[in-house]
Amino acid sequence: MTDFRLEHEAHVVLAIGTVRQGPPSESRCVDDRGRWLSKTSDPVATMGRVQGVPQAVDDAMLAAVVRGAGDAMGIIDETGVIHYVNEFGARHFGFTPDELVGTNFVDLTHPDDLERNIEMMVTSAEEDEGRDWFSPPVLTRARQRGGGYCFVSVTGSVVARTDEHVYLSILLRPADDFVAMHAALRATIDSSEPDEVLERILEIVRWQQDRPFVCLVRRVDGELRLLGDDLPRDLCGEAWATGSPWDEAWKGEPSRGTAGELPPELRDIAVEHGLHQFWIRPVQRAGHDVAAVFTLWYPTAGRSLLAWELTIDFMIDATSVALAYHDQRVQLEHVARHDALTGLPNRRAFLGAIADLVAVAHGAGAIEPVSGIADHEPCAVLYIDLDGFKPVNDRFGHSAGDAILAAVGDRLRMIVSPADLVARLGGDEFCILRRNTTTDDAVALADHVLAELAKPFPFVAGDVVDNSAAVAPARRSQPVVGDQMFASIGASIGIAVGRSTDADGLVGRADRALYTAKSLGGRTTHLAD
Image (tube, rainbow, N blue to C red; front, top):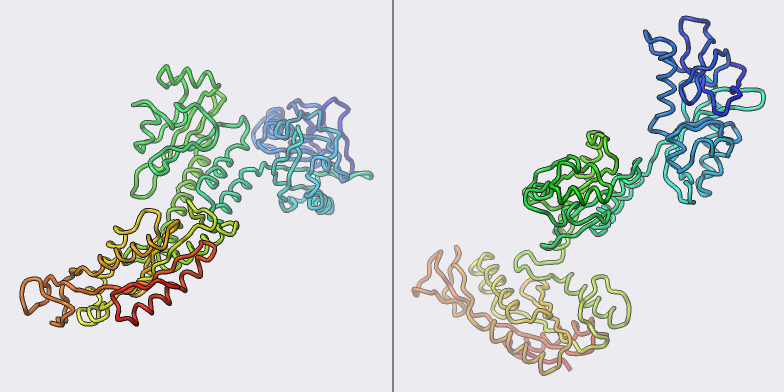
């Protein structure tokens, strides 16, 4: 092919459907409306005809493929001037084919993506025509009517050369779904809040032609939360009537159908909003109840929803993964910040709360904001160390020691107020942080803790039994394995009171006050200077 011509028509001519039985260079030309025009030995492009099908039918079939393709297809020259664009390509960007023909492909490119698009054009133009070769796809942004941009994957191939120009076939595939999937995955990896991740998942279907309406209703702490398009509550699963598809979805049963199949009151709402076909799917966690209900409404009647099946399946799976990932992250974070034995916050959580308290008091942002904090409010730290615990743990085993430590945690939880923070720092050391307090209140709290921890702690005797004064059998003078025992231990407590701006310093002061209490014989409290 050494020559190239476009028929003098008001529309672009495509040369398609090579006649295998005729001369090797003979091809039939049809326009972008599927009409046969002429034969030429200089086609724009050749495509293998369908064997056993009449030529006119073959031409119409191939033209229909180009015209009705679900991808944007066009022909440009090496300068970027557009000579042809199919109907989908023009409509996807908000134009008509006539509005784009004669403009420049470069003008439709986002400025930041211009260099890679030019590189794609140059790479394509350097290849020989007739090769089954397309340039590697380039992810770029293309301008739409109104000034916005959408993501497309662009690739090109030489279709003809003349003395003046090189003509390239350009294929642009919508890629907003790919970008949305990447954004959803990135948000998941970055441990974003579930709602942000799920909103990005919903974006995956919004690039489609005749944009569907999508929403997700999920349970959060016993309440329902709506994400996505603002649809009537009765048509999205946020509220539902008994026996409706959404009622069944919350029971774990998926459904799809048309508005006409709904009860009259729901059908009227759907028709009023221009909604025709629906797809409703529950999202379930493994071994749990339905966590969310996904609803897709298609505004065009007569479209088969089977075409959406893979997309819907992907979105359901992606939503399940996102929720499961969030649950696991929350669980791991809880494990990382709590003591497994007592269930209390651990040293990391306690010191983190102290750091946040100081940050808020100084006007800085806290990593995990502490609610109800006033600047420079008085705070108290009680540093607690158990007395007489080690002999019980050593002589009756770790199971006895663990039972006592768990009981200490339970008692401390019952003593403190909801606004207090009680933590196990490690071993037999505990701490209490009380905000917005006074010295007298802190001392009274310490006395209460001291009294409660002085009460005997029950435990079951282990393999090693000791008749020391620290432990006593519940039923007989000589205990045996399995007996109910009681240990009298007690505690020493260091108290430090100060401003929240110096909350981290309070921990050190309370620690030093604790050792003073220990040096006084234990089972007492000491207030730091």
